[in-house]
Amino acid sequence: MEDAHSIITSLPNHPGTTFVGVYDGHSGHDASRHLQDNLHIELDKLDALTPPNITALLEKLDISFGHSEKSTQGSTIVAALIEKIENTKPKKYNIQIFWVGDSRAIGNNRGKFMSLTVDHKPSNPSESTRILEAGGTVSVDNRVDGELAMSRAFGDWNLKNKHLKYNNMKVICVPEFQSVVLQEGDWLLISCDGLTESLTDKNIGDTCGKALLETPDDPDVVLTKLLDAAVKSNSRDNMSSVLVQFRNGLQFAKRDENRKRTFQPGPVFKMLKNRQFMNAWTRNCQAVGYVDPQNCTSLMRAAYEFEANRMSDEKKLKEIRQAMELIPQLNESPTEIQLEVAPRTKYSQDVQFILKMEKPGWKEASEKSGLGNILSVLSGNQAEGESRIDEKKTEEEGVVIRKRGSILRTDQRKPQA
Image (cartoon, rainbow, N blue to C red; front, top):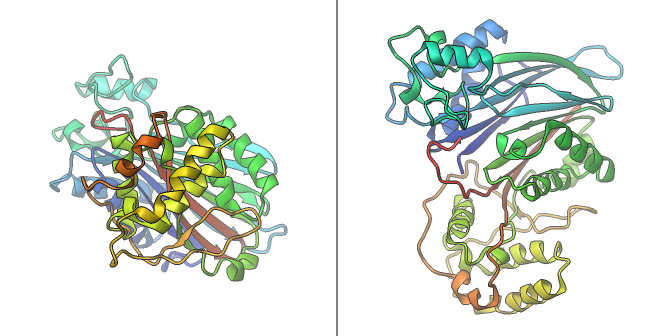
């Protein structure tokens, strides 16, 4: 999982300013994690959060990262700085969006859909001119030197010309900016390109808006529907999305006291014979502390229930039920962690486990066999599937934030962008 994100409800040196960032890494996770750990801290040191200051900061951070051993790894950036406008009714908020690469921000202003970013693609006229003048090429499949699917990125120093001025390099980490005022009842969605791979911004906006009308008090359900739509559209990349609702979030503080950070295992049954998928699913589970997730009874039961609740095919549903009967046969380690199940709400009925780990870390895949071997006889279906991990939500008056990520990687071309 190469995606990362940051959610800071109030920057210490800029009280009242919320920072939300999503980083889509490629060729490894170090660049995106570096941004996750450092970007908000360095932003907070700025005297003023202005476009010139932020632009200079990103160049400085990128050049510094270029001296590291992981400098050939890269990441997109899409972020929002949110500040409430005082003495407005309804409450209004200044939103400053900045981005590098092809991750996106989408807004809804009093029911009006808004695309707030424009992808930095090598084929864009201004981008291709810079790339060619720097001695690079734009391939037929729209990649810088046949490798990178975006023309701006943090990192990727194997594609940056150190003898040129920074802004003249083939690939640069120079952000663009967009400002908008949103108000109570509006929402903002910040996502990596896994969500937008096969869906248009309008598709995403319509899906999110409809889901919010159906389940206004369960944004995790909204994001589940959104990611399900992306998977159905044949997206095969990492997916991470942060939903910011502009509303009074105090009502959620008590209800969601034990749901602020949860882990929800996604479906695995139809993908049991897909080794690549199962390795990815296993690493997601190991990232939150499970040592041998395929032999963890509570985890596998939750994953199967998730799939069974969405299965309309009676034959496949019967197979899942049969598989669930075999769960007690798993060879579970007595030292395996047991996470507490989070309270459910009216519409959020899938099993979620309370995540106590502050900073889950990506783990290497284990080759140890587990449930996939035990139940392989029951599943001959190697169709596509999805795995969903991690929800993070933060409440404070006026702003409610939800984040859910998912991993489904079947394209192993590197660098993956």
